[in-house]
Every structure is written in structure tokens, then in C-alpha cells.
Length: 192
Image 1 (spheres, rainbow, N blue to C red):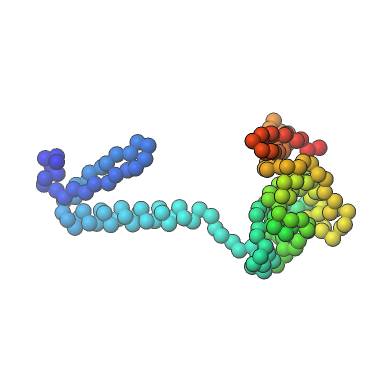
Image 2 (cartoon, rainbow, N blue to C red; image 1 turned 90 degrees about the horizontal axis):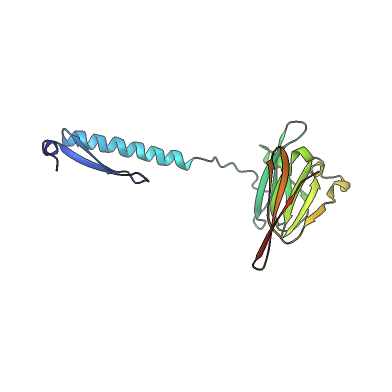
């Protein structure tokens, strides 16, 4: 123990991290030591609580999906009228509703096992991974689901495990991952 520590009331803290170490602080009295420890623990508890509230949970709809329908994915897009819509993929189809209005959700596609949805607003296109089938639909389906002509999707790929849309050099691409046995392949598509 350090010579000056004999005259005070030490307490230690250990920082666990990449460059962590142990720090020894010395208080002038047991009351000061307790006050230091209490304040440090209060700050620590406050930081933990702040970390737990990184996301706010907002209930979209209690009644639309019921107890037996599992939702698997979601995304959003902005309509030409500047309203935000949420698109949800579920085990029994695709649903769309206005953000903030839990009563507005309706089913727009009767497809089973929706796994992933991407909206390509610039191309007015919605990509849907239905089980292992990648399909493309007009985004107009989300704005006017009653039009039967909008319900026709185009098959882009089969045996798809995962897909993702992104941009490279100001051009939009869709990466499609296929797994078959021990082999995997990645196909890159460019929407037109």
C-alpha cells in the first residue's frame, strides 16, 4: 500500500476494457468514501438505464395480425403525397399501413412465408422474398391494393436464401444469395 494511502480511506475501481486497469482513490473519511461510491454507482445505474432505451417500442397494431400470424420483416417508404407507410411481411402475406395509424393496416398480398421486403422507391418497385422465391411488384400495389393489375409479380430468382439492395457509384444493385447443398452463389441484379 502507498504511504499516503495509510492516512486515508482507499477504494478501488476496475475498468474492464481493451486498455482497462485498476484505479485506487483515497477519501479523507469513511463518509466521503461512501458518498463517492454512492455517486459513482448512481451514474453507473443511470448509464445502464440510458443504454436500455436505445429504441422506443411502438405498438403498430394489436388486432391486424392476430395471435397465430407471425410477422417476419418490415420496412417503410414515403408515398408521392409525402405520407410514410409501413410495409410488414408476415407468414400469411404482406400488409401495409400509414405510420402512426394502427387501424390503417390491410393485407395487400396473399402470399405465404414472407421473409424479407425491400422498397426501391426510385424504381417504384417492391422486392419480396417469399419462402425462397424472390419476386418484384409495382409499388403502386401498396398505394392502391384494390387494383387487380397491380397484384402481378415478376419472378426474379428461386432458391434464394437472402437478398439485399444497395448502391454503388450512384447505381442501385440487388445482391441475391443462393445456397444449394454446400455450394453458395451470389448474383447481382440491377433494377431498370
